[in-house]
Image (spheres, rainbow, N blue to C red):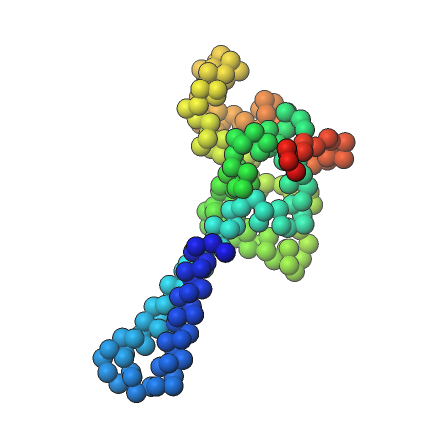
Length: 209
């Protein structure tokens, strides 16, 4: 249980105790102090606890474990451990180039609930499909992968800026930074999750596990 969750539970319990006390001793609310206490117990504390709870769940939804808890995402989790340096997600995950506990969110910061209004509506569609319908197969991005998701980590990095493949043509770099030339669709880094190949793949085993 995280610190935020502990505080939220404590606020809820304290609010319940105050409400129970006010229920059995309603005469307390006859005074100005009693009215203020009732206001805090029945409105302020519940709203505060609810806000902390929502924030806790939002933070949890950024975790890799949360993303991979859906059955349809299991193969994407497996692809993070493919023992092949040409797999972009795998090489980032295995070498801690992205936080492993937030690997999915780090590379998809604009997806569903974290994106714009359209993305949020698509997220609701996913919830409906998962619980009441049937998820689409194969899973595909709604729009081409945006270079912004690469650049928010790599931009300014020496390995990226001084790479011969990136720097030999100034126009090439400018097009990548302007998202006019896709990092994952230009033929340079086009092996991403590559789910169909997992049957023949070998997998990396983390030391000590």
